[in-house]
Amino acid sequence: QVQVAESGGGSVQAGGSLRLSCVASPSTANTDCMSWFRQAPGKEREGVASIVGSFINYDNSTTSGRFTIARGNSKNTVYLLMDRLKPEDTATYYCTAGCRGGPWSSWSSYFYWGRGTQVTVSS
Image 1 (spheres, rainbow, N blue to C red):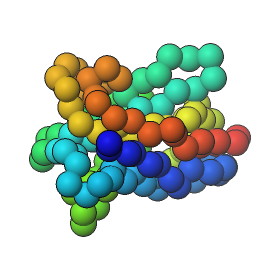
Image 2: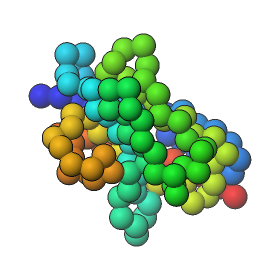
Image 3: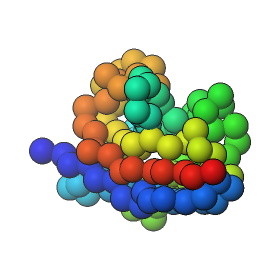
């Protein structure tokens, strides 16, 4: 069974930065496809960014060039670098892995997902 674990969330002031990490295990898991989603209280879950092989997608309306998704040295590790954070970025951030087909921004397009890490941005 593949497990996905996020870390790196926390509380920051507006304009600050955070780096979220995601590790899928075991290391032999299919991690060609990994993505980040987020869900704010009272709102629907939304795709933030994905990396599929060497292809990267962003929800530009969400990230506006402030977020960067990148793989670590190990292919089963992916990061979400978030700069110039805004209060509206406050949400639980989830990592997903293992594409099962479908749009990258659809939660159902993935086999595995983590429990999330909380990001709180204060004004």
